[in-house]
Image 1 (cartoon, one colour):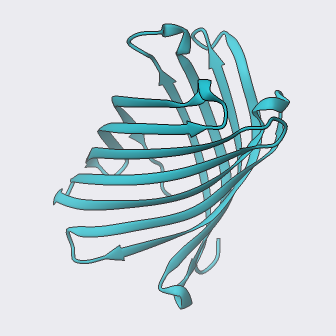
Image 2: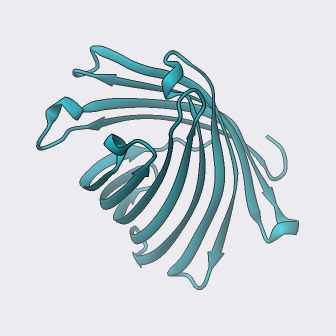
Length: 195
């Protein structure tokens, strides 16, 4: 768009299936449009703001669970140690502006760190930690979610990513039924269009 200012558009469809307790299965569609600004006076930090739409469904897309519109904003800093090693730091907030279920509307405050090691030009290993604080607007509930993950990302083409990962999630909630520990293993494929 302009020097150091970029337009960012994103669409993702995720499908979650559980080995046990298939009543927890769900799907999540996310679309966003926003701006990214590179600020060289702050060590090339990246500022971003996006409007987002999220749609959660169940029963193989047949049952609508929650639709929301939110505003995501934050700052990201990349530290490159050498051509193979780098560290990514993020601070961001995500505020629901409107949703179709009042009790689900919330704000998220997120801090994460990710280390990346380039095994080969097109194969990257990463390890990450993310802390998210959920603050629900209309119910007396707050959650603290910790996620530790390891990932392998292969990019055989500039526009194609194939990835596998494992995460460990630890959620501490004001409401006991939402306290949980979980391990997830998965993989996927993504395509990117760059202009």
